Length: 320
Image (tube, rainbow, N blue to C red):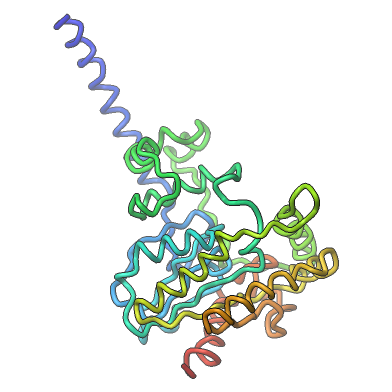
């Protein structure tokens, strides 16, 4: 028996060493974008969070791509807590995790997308598990939805075992495409196609079998939680919707005339209940037809995000 155990142990040692080496190379070659980088894609993580944050935003991809703080880094401690497809309920969990980083008097932009309040609970969606894995990299386990210890171990220490063979081989060989959406620019033709597709994937899908819009109370309530958290930390919460091209908003108006009535009804109630300010730049003429400021219909590029933050500093922050 002892000999058998010894042989098993001897067999496992090289397997362990090879696995460690594969994981080391995989992690080294994997792109690691932070939300404050000058290159942005949907694979970003929240990293290098500073102390004493004075100016920040939290939201989904519209916030992630929509804020360019470069011009103001010498005047404020800035940070972007937004991530692609990040729900309002996860925005709250992220802010709970990092609330000790917020300075008293900070200005916090809470990005509200037109789709933020509708649809099924994200834990019921097919892509939830894959998307949820990213939070194991930077959140305390108590803030991770449906936390699983095995997933935690694999994501943190054995990430190469959780990907398909093609991605693994490409990453090990350094053939991972370094996508950078933020420095691209869209066109009218591309925007027309993208806007039509966005309507189907973001608006049309969020109805039940009877065709009624699905109101997501969890996500709505999370806005209240975020506002309360900000105020508990002595910060100023501001609700905001980033600019969009008209090719994004027009299909919604044309195909679902009641959509914006439903959205603004929720916003108005939140404002009445909390007294928080809401600024809607979704139809702003300074952006809605300027393709040079977007990389697709609903995401600003680096140039557009710089212009947007300049406007926010002049129209909102400077008069607080």
